[in-house]
Amino acid sequence: DQQVKQNSPSLSVQEGRISILNCDYTNSMFDYFLWYKKYPAEGPTFLISISSIKDKNEDGRFTVFLNKSAKHLSLHIVPSQPGDSAVYFCAALKRTASYDKVIFGPGTSLSVIP
Amino acid sequence: NAGVTQTPKFRVLKTGQSMTLLCAQDMNHEYMYWYRQDPGMGLRLIHYSVGEGTTAKGEVPDGYNVSRLKKQNFLLGLESAAPSQTSVYFCASTRSGRTYTGELFFGEGSRLTVL
Image 1 (cartoon, each protein chain N blue to C red):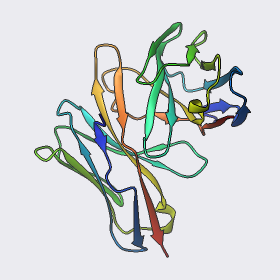
Image 2: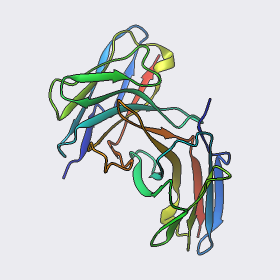
Image 3: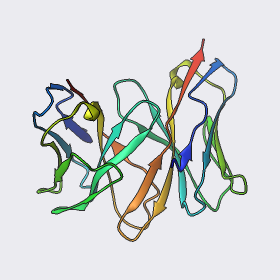
Image 4: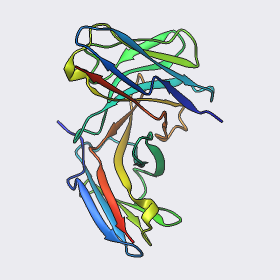
């Protein structure tokens, strides 16, 4: 049972336009939501996060929006650049008694076309 | 500034062979993790460690063993490799504590093929 879902395996966007990557989750008990970026042959790198008590977090060209009632979050990249072409993983953090559990979605491959 | 280093980067095994993946981090992190990445399934946690000498099972631990004899190293072992273990393996580490907000530091990955 996938707790973090990314229903779009891929997305293509023109350079300079907005990229919107979507993520849905099933568990209301997550404490933080995160986005990771992964280039081929590299490990994922942390991009941006948002606390479950917030509805927006912005960092430069990247903004994450959280809609708790819909159990949905999205990552907006404006303007999109060719270097943004990568796989983006949505993830959720749940604190437990034993450790802080991070659950990943399956990823969305973004292609930014020059 | 190495961060998290995994060795080897690539390996091909025959069914039934054994091997060990080594993960080393130089950030003095308490927590270390082993994930596997398969197409369409994201990253799934195999085993984790919350400190030197302690390990625990993640969501897909079967067929793997781990050890954390030193704080900076986390070893993942396959005693008898199976084709289903063909995957890309990622090690990650992070600091502990209530200020932790989910930022993991990953190695570059180890691609394992089991024939």
